[in-house]
Image 1 (cartoon, protein in one colour):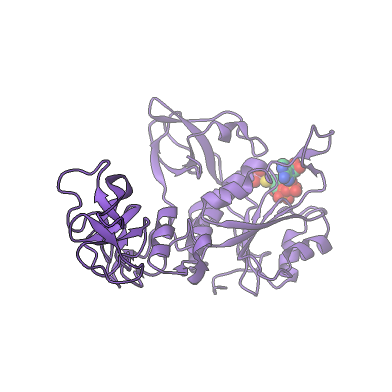
Image 2 (cartoon, helix red, strand yellow):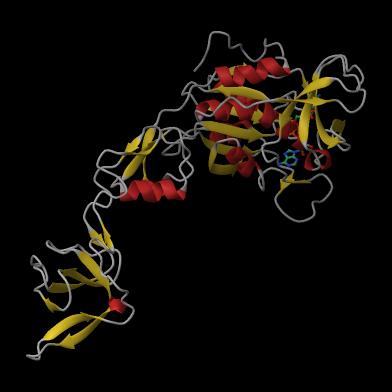
Amino acid sequence: MVTAASTPEESALPHTWSEARERAWDVAQPLPAHALPLSLAVGRMLADDVFSRHAMPHYASSAMDGWAIAGSAPWIFAEPGTKLSAGQAVPILTGGLIPQGAKAVLRSESGVLSTDDDGLPVLVLGGTARPGEPKNGQHIRPAGQEAATDDLLIKAGVVLNPAHIALAALGAMDELSVLGKPAVKIVLTGDEVVASGIPEPGFVRDAFSPQLGAVVAMLGGSVVGLQRAADTLASMLDALDDDEDDPADVIITTGATGRSSADFLREAITAMGGTFHVSHMAMRPGHPTLLAELPDGRFILGLPGNPLAAMVGLITLGAPLLARLGSLPCPVTTEVACGSPIKDYHGPTRLMPYRLVYGLASPCAHTDSAMMRGLAAADGIMVVPPHGAKMGESLTAIPLPWA
Ligand SMILES: Nc1nc2c(c(=O)[nH]1)N[C@H]1C(S)=C(S)[C@@H](COP(=O)(O)OP(=O)(O)OC[C@H]3O[C@@H](n4cnc5c(N)ncnc54)[C@H](O)[C@@H]3O)O[C@H]1N2
Ligand code: MOO
C-alpha cells in the first residue's frame, strides 16, 4: 500500500535504522488467506479451525486380520455381507467393515479351520488363543473412536506439520485455508559476477545465489524465481516486469543500488511509477538498501551488492516486510552487553556482527561491507548508536535468521 508519508527518491532524507525497520513493517499488510490442496500445505500457517467432516473412523472396523465372529466357538461360516447370528463367522482383514451382528474379531493366529461331525468347515479356537478370547468388542475399532463429526481437529494459527496434513485427510478435508506467504523473486545484477570457479581479477564470485533463497525462507518468504539482470536500464526494467502468470509479491534485487553509470535500479523503479518507502538509511553497512513499491502493489527490496551490506539490509528491512506480509509476528530484537568500547562514528548507526565471549558481545573481525568472515562467525548483530558504546553497555541486538 502506498502511504502518504512515502517520499520521492531524490528528496528523501535517510531514515534511521529503527525508523526504516518500522516502516518496512508498517507499509505492508498481511496477504489474504487462500485454499491449498493438502499436499502443498505442509509448513503453512492454518487460517481457519479444521473440523472433522465425519466420524473418525467413520465405520466400525477390524484392527486385525482374522474372522468377525458372533457367539462362541465353534463357528460356521456365514455368507459375506450378511448379518451374523450366534455361532457364525466370516473372514475379515484389518480395516475391514465389521458385519452386522458381529461381537468381536478373532485374530488369524487364534483360530483354526476344522470340520464338524458332518464334514462341514468350522472355525475353532486354537493356535495362540488365550483363555476368554475373543472378548466382546475385541479387535474392533468402533466408529467415532478418534473423533465425532464436527470435532475440532486443528486450531487456526498452527504451522501445519505432516501429521496435521494426515489428520486433515482422515477428517475428509481435500484442501486447507492457509495464511498468505510472500512469493519472492530474486534478481541478481552485476556483469562482473560469476557463478562458479575462481574468478579472474575484475570479476567476483556470486555470494548471493547459493544462499539468499534459504535466508528468504527462514524469514517467511518463498522463492518463486531467480534471474539475472544485465547492467542496463532495459534489462532491469525487463527483470522488474510482472510478465509471469503469477507475479511475486516481493522482488529482492542485489547490487545496482548506487548511482553510478552501471546502476539502474532507482531509475527503473522511478520509470515504473514506483514509490520509495525507504530510499537509503543512516546505517553502516548497507546504507543504500532501499524499499519501494510498484503501482501494482509489488514491493522491491533493493540490497546493495556488497555481501555484508546486503545481509544487513535484508535482516533490517526484509525481515519485517516478509513477516508482515506472511502474518508472522514482528521480528524481535534482544539486548546484549557490549564487550569492548566502541568509538563515536559521527553519523550512522552501525550494525556490527558480534561473538559472545564470556557473555559479552565482542565485535567480530572481518566486517567490512564486502566481507563475510565476520558474519559467518557471528552469534548475532548488535546495533551500535552513532555515538558509540561503553564497555558493558546494553545494546539492541538482532538474532541471526539461522541462529
Ligand atoms: N560514490 C559512491 N560510491 C559508493 C557508495 C557511495 O555512497 N558513493 N556507496 C558504497 C556502498 S556503501 C555500497 S554498499 C555500494 C552499493 O553498491 P551497489 O548496490 O550499487 O552494488 P554494485 O555496485 O553492483 O556492487 C558493489 C560491490 O558488490 C559486489 N557484488 C555485486 N553483486 C555481488 C554478488 N552477487 N556476490 C558478491 N559480490 C557482489 C560488486 O562486485 C561490487 O564490488 O556502493 C559503494 N559505492
Ligand atoms: O554501506 Mo555499504 O552498504 O557499506 O557497503
